[in-house]
Amino acid sequence: MSAEPLLAPILADAPWLISGGTARVLRLLNADGEEARVVGGAVRNALLGLKPGDIDIATTARPEEVMRRAKVAGIKSVPTGIDHGTITLVIDSHPYEVTTLREDTETFGRKAKVAFGRDWVKDAERRDFTMNGLSVDAAGVVYDHVGGIADAKARRVRFIGNPDQRIAEDYLRILRFFRIHAAFGAGEPDRDGYLACIRGHAGLASLSAERVRMEMLKLLVTSGASAAALAMAEGGLLQALTGGVVYTGPLTTMIAIERELGLTASTTRRLAALTVAVTEDAKRVAARLRLSNAETKALDSMGHRWWRLVTKDEANARRLLYRLGAERYHDRVLLGWARAGGDVTSMHWRALAELPQRWTAPKFPLKAADFITRGLAEGPALGHVLTLAEDAWLAADFPLDEAALASIADQAVARIGRDERT
Picture 1 (cartoon, rainbow, N blue to C red):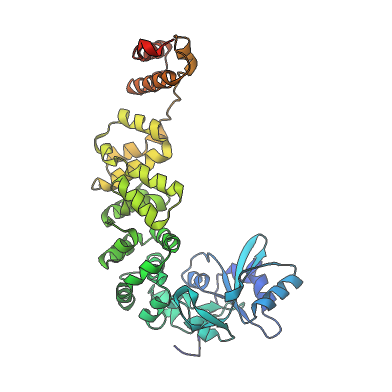
Picture 2: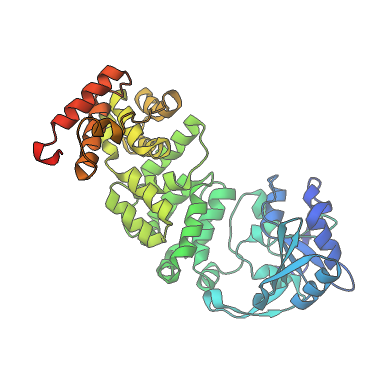
């Protein structure tokens, strides 16, 4: 680490830096003895030729001064994290997080005590990874106090300073190490960082389920999710997070299937492939990661007897599609495909997966009135006969002609005992 920064060539292709809201915030804060720079992921992404993503700005100006300047300029400011120096400025409905330069005076995980300062070196050194410790000024000059330029170009995710110490400051950095590597790294994870993550694994138990969920779901949709999950599993880290067995093979296959079918990466499908073999797994993972009700139901549906799809023909598949709806059906088929040992070019599985594109389930055409006219009164028996008729309609492969429907209705009524009729 050096107080003298390594200056990269001026960013040649960063229009977000010279126009729009980012440029306006930098102009606002680069005056009267204060300085502001874009920091972190946006700088890393620019060096890698990627979209900037979220744009975070650091400044020497204290929070109250940031808010004062924003008010004078007619910019809305929200004290989203004022105790830690963060003010969110809103320009054209887009938020920009502005944080005063800081240095840690005491560290207790997420409850670190910080002091505001004006030292860009110390601010860079308190960040997690070297490629995230970069900053760029309004002129496009990149400042590197931690070796981040070389690591970014080599796609090497490396902790700033002592990895064990940085992890002890916040154990979520274990998950961030693998997520950032999966998204931006290449090759094997940095060995020093990897071993430090394994040594610090007990600290994962101190993290809230919500924070773990957030990082895990982000990791699963990265380009390197499969390799990262395997590295975490081999280091004994994934099992601690999910509370049970993990299945890295099905995850790899699920990712390959999504690519084969041209699908957008799905956090829920990939989480199911990694963690769910039966519905009990879905409940465990949902509780462990505090998943939403929608996420929990999706995992539970995918895990429900997916193995029956291995031998299911299209007629049976149509009935399942009718019962589940297109989205739930599709996800269950993909989980079955991923867990079946996985030939991603399988025509059987592709046909099942693409069924919703070829066929739309009709609505059940029989109504309560069709049975009331046959002498059935409203009540529990009516609900029962409707269920019997629907099952028979599905078994007959969705007929819609009047003769077939009349026969189904008559047979359903005949199955109801005389004591249930009026």
